[in-house]
Length: 113
Length: 111
Image (cartoon, rainbow over all chains, first blue to last red; front, side, top):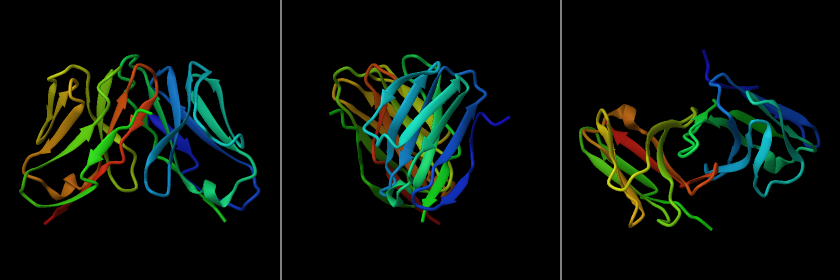
């Protein structure tokens, strides 16, 4: 009964490839997020969707494109992968409309070679 | 720019000792302060979410306080145990869906 799940857990790919990471939540939450854990281990928000609508779009290269087919899913597609894209990507969801307490997925470790 | 800052960056504590660390945030437009516990190779898990000035929350040996007027929160751990070793993240949101995270305090408990 995993609350927020991500696939794959590990992804190793070559520069220039296009890849997707999938996220699903079974909590019935309206809002979903993608975060990147950078090389200094900081957690940086990339995108957020509320009920399939994009509401947060931080300064992220346009090679990154989120897609939300329904409010339980938020996928992250990355085109033309670069070495600097190597990181751990976390999906999260929230429901509380005041605090936006985050429920995180297990993370996807992306390695670009 | 709304910055959330944490100190210290890292901390080594002897097993059995108590410890605390700080999160500071802009007090204007404040909505909520979050503490997350993040173990290595796992995902962050919420410890506390506080909204009101003077809030104090407790979960076992861990407690947190909130001062929204001066813009700080303390996290306390009483009688540290090896399983408390983790990075403790605080985050704040300022009236929208975006949480601004601090850089974390990395706590290591020495047996």
